[in-house]
Length: 312
Image 1 (cartoon, rainbow, N blue to C red):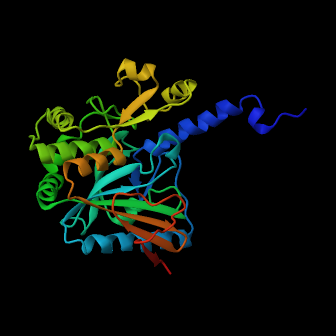
Image 2: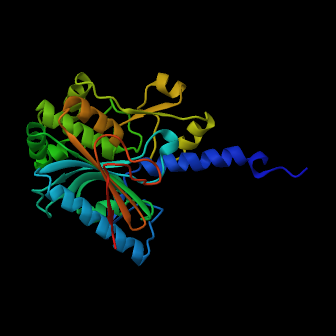
Image 3: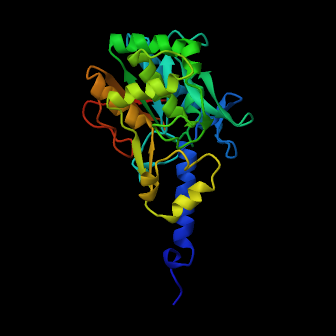
């Protein structure tokens, strides 16, 4: 009897190699290069049609922000598929009306591939979205904050001294939430919230103080449960992922506790119930826009109350 592919030797290991790669690339904060965001060894290729649609999609997001009456928002985008790990969005930043680069540019942390260290970048919304793996199905989440929270975040995000004070530690895509040895893109956003809302200073211990405030305020990282123990060995061989900062009890249970957009949004919703969320989903030429905290279903399918727009 000829074995099926799923029964063939090595199939399970190869499947989990792919899952480990998805985790690594999905968590990685790519470098900003030539106006497009790309993983260090996996450039994103797009057709002219895809690129045009993505620029149109970015303009819809920017128009929504401009009409919100706010000056700052949290912006998250989907990247490589992490749904098997319970995540839809992989990368978050702070979009600012008062950005010195251009209105509603996104301030965020990326891994600078050539320098091999994390850096803060200001980038337009179109460039932010170009980090997605493929333009055929794009998702963006916008969280608009009430006035006191928004004003404090805007001050911290626009103050280079505060933003850079949190840029301490080597880069690790799966940086442990309560350690300062490593840093990733979403951890920087979470700690910026801690600095802004906890009014913590921009000194050498800025990260420790911001984390202490977040912990006291009930912030909880996303728990990545690795479902196949040998996958932990595969992850250990990927240069962007590290084990050493994670507690031994978590590693024994194959768990990584990492700041992700979903954790940041859940914390904001609890802390500021007045905060508003707008989600955008693009599939082909159709864009679905939803107000509220209930996510748009897989397949970008609209429901009553959603707005449906076209890019053509």
